[in-house]
Length: 291
Image (cartoon, rainbow, N blue to C red; front, side, top):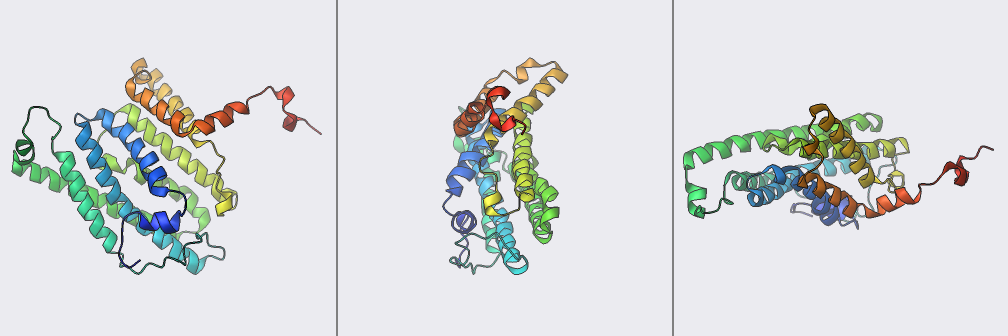
């Protein structure tokens, strides 16, 4: 690998045979971002495209952290957790290459987000070139904010990689906050979407805490953990508490919440089946019997 290509390291080396881009990036993270931000956008189509481009730019920098994590693990850890493909795909590209990709996708994503191309009845040329000076200023300002965020992300991941495994547990929360809430640097959402991001951060971090305290090996990752069940549970609990506090029942009953519930049920159907299949009276569960 002498040329950097976005997601290739994650797909082939960090998470081989797991369809990482399809299932984790598109099928989970991207859908969560859409459920969070697109419902609050007046221009959903440009929002969708812009979000995807920004997500690619984000992962270009996040993957540098993956590469660094593997290198330091091999160098300093007695039992480094490396995939079986790690030695088969030695990378030789310079680490400035992901930054070039990140900058390009950042510019494209921010430009799309700043173009009101979804307005009906407005000519595309007018939408793009109208008020050119103002749009250039807005795009430049947004670009600086986003690049500053990517620099912070890179710094945090670098610190994470330098820490021992015990200290990484709490630092992981910061990385997950960047992964899901970093887009708030440029975009805003409503309460329903914000609670979804927070729920996602909490459950992913909970899985990581379990993984670390169970040994920190690949085999220790809680694969049977019904994360979508807990996504939805934590999500509805937090949102319900906010709705009760604000005396606003509409926070719970709207199309966005319905879409989020449908997403969790669809992606985590096996998780829900497993949880409810284990539901039984204590008298029928021999594992609770005292010897």
